[in-house]
Image 1 (tube, helix red, strand yellow):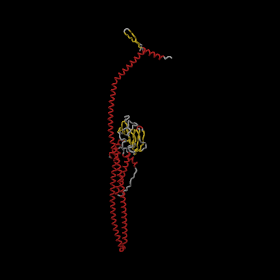
Image 2 (spheres, one colour):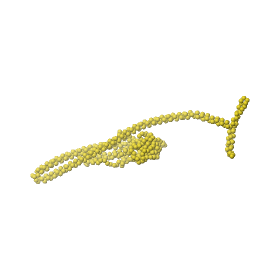
Image 3 (cartoon, one colour):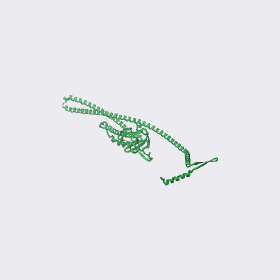
Image 4 (cartoon, helix red, strand yellow):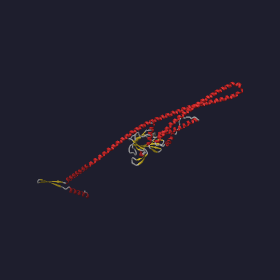
Amino acid sequence: MMEPTGQTTFRERWGTRLNEMFPERQIVLRTEERVSYLRISKAPQMTIAAALLAFSGWIGFTSVSYFLNDQILASKNGQIVNARLAYQGLLNEVGEYQRKFIGITTDLEENHGLMLGLVEQNASLQQDLSSIEHELKVTEAERQAIYGARERLKGDLDNIQDNLTSITSRNYLLQDNLDTTTSDLSSALSERNVALVESKRMKVYAEELEATLSSLETAQVGTVDDLTRQTENNIESLERVVQMAGLDLAAVLEKNMSETAGQGGPFIAVPEGVSGDELRMKLVSLDNRLEQLHVLQASMQRIPLAAPLKTYYLTSKFGKRRDPVNEKWSMHYGIDMGSTNKSPVYSTAPGVVTYAGWKGKYGKLVEIDHGGGIKTRFGHLGKIYVKKGEEVGFYKKIGQVGSTGRSTGPHLHYEIVFGKKPMDPTNFIKAGRYVFQDQG
């Protein structure tokens, strides 16, 4: 078979070119009178030329590498120095975080002790209220007994008056026959004198009973006044905590009033008359203040005053901030709490879980409804330990710190909502610390 003309021409031209570059050469060697020839064909010449070309390339490469080596070493030394400076900066930051961690741990230990003191004081107050209610019951029983004795004395006085009336009528009837009824009249007069003496004695006894009732009423008024003052002091303390948390006191009372509208308690009768009006008014006022205190105490159980992490540091505050991802200004409706990965996250008040799962940029989210219009949200969790509809108590473990969703690293996004309005969780945590310090 014949090859194509174009391919034959290329080979011929290439062979001609090689023949021109590497023609057959002869080297003349003369030794004294003897001449010899050394023939060098095209193939050895091409081999020698290729070796010389490779050797020249290697010489050039090593020369360039030798001159550039110093620059590369200088660049590496600079990188090493920068790495050492960065490492020293990281060591300084770690030391600062350790100091902050120790300070926060100390604060949490103090707050725990203050919380225990608050619980003990509340228990003592409940015991005092129970003892006062018992005293009121006993006093009321004594008063009822005195009232019964007074009514019996009134009945005896009425009987004496009836006897006197009967004796007087009999005297008028006996005047027609004085001779025959002298002895009877003398007896009647003697009976009347005895009756008058008994009536005076009964009046004195009634006056003594009235004085006893007055002293008992005075003691009851003092007891009610003391209890009212204690109740008002407790109300002022709780109202101060609600205001420190940034909540509207009137709105909190309104939202919790319907859930605590039930009434009850022992029946304590108030005597009729002018002297009982003061005690009656004071008891009504005390009942109103106790009802307000009950509503506030029920509200305090729903307010999240504790921190959801045992140890943390604040990485982003509530409100306007630079977005950590795109560096643009944005609104932050919670706080970011930095902590180690997988640190336990706790509920900050009793409530019912209304959401537990993945929620967009929040990542893994838990939402708890505490009642009274208050909700808390915990975002970017690594794990979730609760389910929707589950009832959780105070400081129950609900998850772990993670970095799910739109997050730059392990932390907890913590939100508090009151009546669909975002609140600053920092104020709630500060109010909780104030409660513990005040009770301590």
